[in-house]
Image (cartoon, rainbow, N blue to C red; front, top):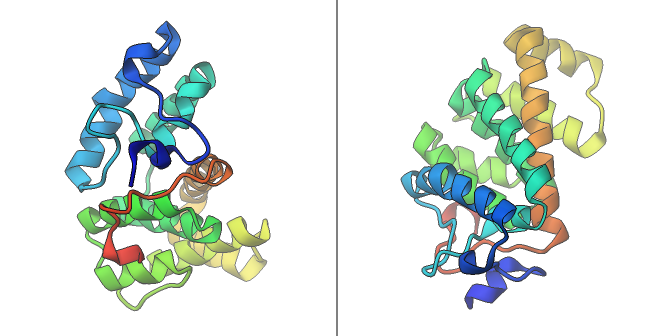
Length: 203
């Protein structure tokens, strides 16, 4: 896949031609998100340093993106949710949105977090899995219903509250909201997963 096509409807911005404000966002991304992506074995930039996935469109709105990055960092730092549950939530959101890059990236992250390949495939398809714990299945159902139907019915809400508590549900809702923003960016600009790197887990 040609580097320019990885931007979807947006050009991949050249790091050498960024404004000062864009450069701050770029440098923060390279210092934080790129090492995280590398550790999880998914591609976040091209060989010449251009950011791909949701990391490119944020450069077009650097001030807002900087604040959003602060929210994402706070969510990851202060959440009471386990990393496995976080990845269940993120994949559940991505499945509703059918956001290729998000499913590609977080399938890799979920594997690193200890989810099985079968569970990841099922989550990416919008389902659950016997490989998930009872609490993880409740999280998937809660987030999927909230994302797809924009409400949560009372029995499911009570089951989720029993599993995670009120604080956990608020954290889960923040996390789901963050990734709806990510998926909005990916889908609005038709940003693909890199074909040569795409995981078989989401094919």
